Image (cartoon, rainbow, N blue to C red; front, side):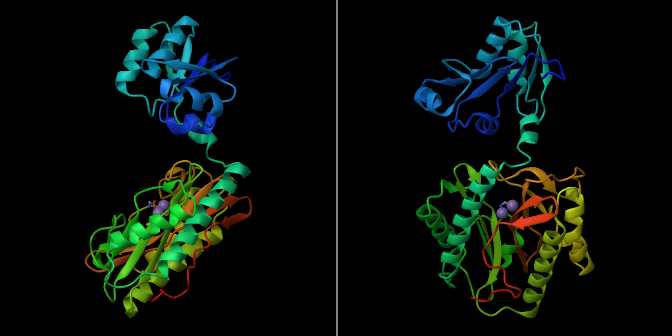
Amino acid sequence: MKLRRLDGVIVSRLVNVRYLTGFTGTAGLLLVTEDAATFYTDFRYEAQASQQVVGPRVSIEKRSLIQCAARDAKRHRLRAVAIESHHVTVDQKADLARLSPETDWLSAQRVVESLRLSKTPDEIAILRQAIEITDGAFVEVLGKLRSGMTERDVAQRLERALQRRDSDGPAFETIVASGVRSALPHGAASGKKLEHGDLVTIDFGGAYKGYCADLTRTVCIGKANSDQKRVYRIVRDAQLRAEEVLRAGLTGRDVDAAAREHIVSKGYGDRFGHGLGHGVGIEVHEAPNLSRTYRSRLRSGSVVTVEPGIYITDWGGVRIEDVAVVMAKGCEVLTRAPKPARLPEL
Ligand code: GLY
Ligand code: MN
Ligand code: MN
């Protein structure tokens, strides 16, 4: 704020409000000025905010929270206030300009997201727990996979196993994609039954204390054929290469390339159509990215997925996904779910 001579910043993206204040409700907004901070919420969260939000003044409002912040910007004659321009809508911007016309409404684009890039030791400890819960649920359900079960049966078992382990719930829609459906990178669980010879890609994660896990494994129901084994091997080797090089100071593009070059060299470059990985934290997808277009350098403390895949229409696909902490001299893979060298045959 000092550098940019700002009198205030409005944080309206709820995940960022949560990050800064600890507030876990569904309506909250923060106005930070040089010497004070105000947290706006409504009647439903009066008691919760007084417990969770320590520091800022809590203001219980009946109207749109961003309009209330604009009212206060006018009242306090704030001349230059930055807003989260990647989140504020055109309508909200018009409201701000109408309610406090003397204020210059500037951009604080992804400022809180950039604070979230490196996780604190406390955040990493919570992520470890989210991942441990998810790994445990996976191992439990893996032992119960049988041909004849539907993908939805599998997803429900995974989600119940998360619940029993005290997860907040699934961090995103559970993917169970079997047979030719495993060629769909985001094949949400359907009514299709698992059949002998199917590749099955399972991608799910439990949230814990607001932080997300993200795990993918691919297995085969019954005996796998040689093509299935070969593609599995290529994806696993690509992933190991990326995990070997992953460290602070490389760009997201460098790490993506470590996996991609291997897949390209085996002739499947055009079948790996997504980025290698993404940051994970309060959101299941957040900065930084491991992808061809991410040219910023990775920082210590970032937590990212490493998830190469090969997807072949009308045949099937393989993806393997771990979560790792970026460190100065390498990385620590947090995921412990088994990842055998050979395609598991159940
Ligand atoms: N399941 C979403 C992802 O792996 O990014
Ligand atoms: Mn995933
Ligand atoms: Mn992922």
